[in-house]
Image 1: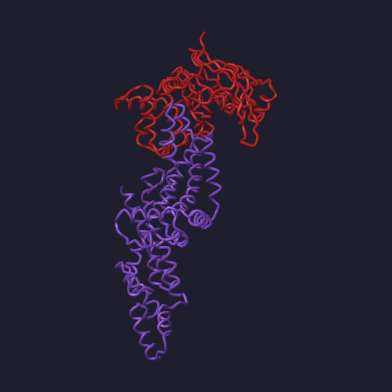
Image 2 (image 1 turned 45 degrees about the horizontal axis):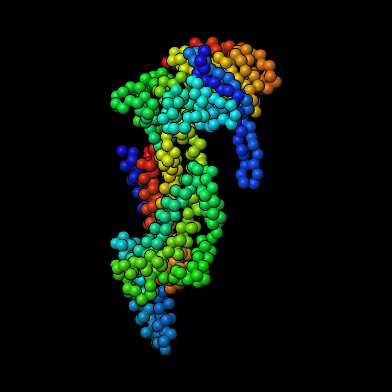
Length: 283
Length: 334
C-alpha cells in the first residue's frame, strides 16, 4: 500500500537567543506516523500548547524544514519543495486551515477575491463565470453560497462564517490532505460541532484526509479515527482514537483526560456523538 | 454613498468648530499679555528727546486707530473675525504697515519647502527600512540600522541639531552656519540661487530626517512583525507568492494605514517643529517669524501665524478622516 503522507522520525530544533549566547530548544522529537492513500481518515494530533503540534503542522505544510528525519507526501520529500511551481503543485494537494478565522483573510481585501484567486492559481481557470461557479460550489459544501459572501469584507462576516469560507477556500483545489491547526479553538462552542461535522463530511463524501490538530479532547474523541498525543515534542501515546481516549496508558494522557473531561466523560462523549450526528448535519 | 456624504458634513462641522475655538483662544491669550504694542511704539518714539503729553496722547490715539486696537476686547474680537473671514490679518505691528499676510507669505515657502520635504523623506525612508527590518528579521545590516535608529531616537532634537551644526559648520565647515541662502544673493529663479538654497537646507533637513526616521522605523517594524505572523501572510507564503509581493501587497499595505495617520499629523504640526529648527539654523521661515513676533509684542502677526497653524493641523486631521474609510474598509462611516 502506498502512503499519502509519511512522517518519518521527524525532529525540529530551534536555536533561541541572540548575540549574547544561545540555547537550543527541541520543539519536536522523533515523531513518526503515516496516512494511507485511498483510505481517507481524520488523524488527530493532540497536546497542550508548547507540545510541538503546531511545529509539526508547519513541517507537514513544508513551511519549516525538519532538522531530523523526513516528511514525504505521495513519495516526494517535502523539504525538497523550493520552486514556486513545486509549491503550487504541493499546495494543490495539501491545504492548510488556520486557527484564527479573523486572521485568515487580509482585512483590506474582499473575501471572495481569495476564493477567485485560489480557483485561478490552482485550477488554472480564467473565465469569470467558471471561477465564480467553482467558488460557489466550494461554498455550498460548507453550507454557504457565493451570493452570501460576494463583495463582503472579513469584518462584515462572523467568525464561524469566516472559518467556513477558509475551509471552502481549502476545498477549491481539490486537495487530498487538509492540515487543520486548531481550527475550532477560536470559534464559539455552538459552531465548533458544525465545523467538526463538516470535517467528517469531507472525509466521507469527498475522500479528503484531515490532520486535525487540537487541544480539545471532546471534539477529538468525537471525530478522530486515529490519534497521537504529544507532550514536550514527543509522541507519548498513539493508536485508535476510541481506544486511546477511553483508556489512556501514559500518565500524561491520563492527566490530560482527567483535566479536560468531567467524571461522566463517557456519557458526555457518547451523548455528544448521538445528538450531534442527529441535529448538526451540515445543511 | 449617502452615509459618506453625511460623514463628510459631520467632519466639516467639527473642522469649523475646532478652527473657531482654537483661533478664539489664541486671540484672548495674546490680548491678555501685558505687552501693549501701542505703548511699545510710544516709548520707542518718546525715547528721542522730550515730547509733550498732548502729543503723546494724540500719538496714542492715532496708533490705536491704525493698529485696530481701539475699543474693548470684545469689540476688537468682533472686528478681528470680520477681517479674518476676508483673509486679512491686518497690518503687522512691528513691521508697520506691512500686512501680516505678506510677511507670512514671504516666510511660508521656506518652512513648507524645508519641513514638508524633510518630513516626507523621513517617513518614506523610515517606513521602507522599518518594513524591511520587520520582514527580514535575520538580516544583519537591517538589525544594525535598527540599533542606530533606536539609539538616535531618544536624543532631544535640538541636541542633534547643535551637534550637526558644530561638527559640519564649525569643526569641519563644509556647510553654512545659518541662513536660507547666500547673503549677497537676491531671491531669483536661477541655478545659482536654487543651488544655494539646497546647500543651506542640507543640515537642517538632515537633522529633521535623522530624528524623524527613528520613530517611523520603529513603528513600521513593530507593525510589520505583527502582521507577518497573521495567517493570511502565512497562507500566501505557503502558496508560493513571491516574498517581495507579500512584503508590498500583504504586509506593507496593511501597515501603512496607521502610518498614514501619523504622516498627516506630523505634516499638520510642522509649524511647531519649525520654531526650534529655524531658530537653531537661522532659517528664514515661519518659526523665526513667530519668535520675532512674540518678542516684539506683535500680536497681529502671532495671531496670523497661529491661525495658519491651527487651520493646517485641523485640515490634516480632516483629510485623514475623510480618506480613512477609503483606505480601510473596517472604518465604519455611519
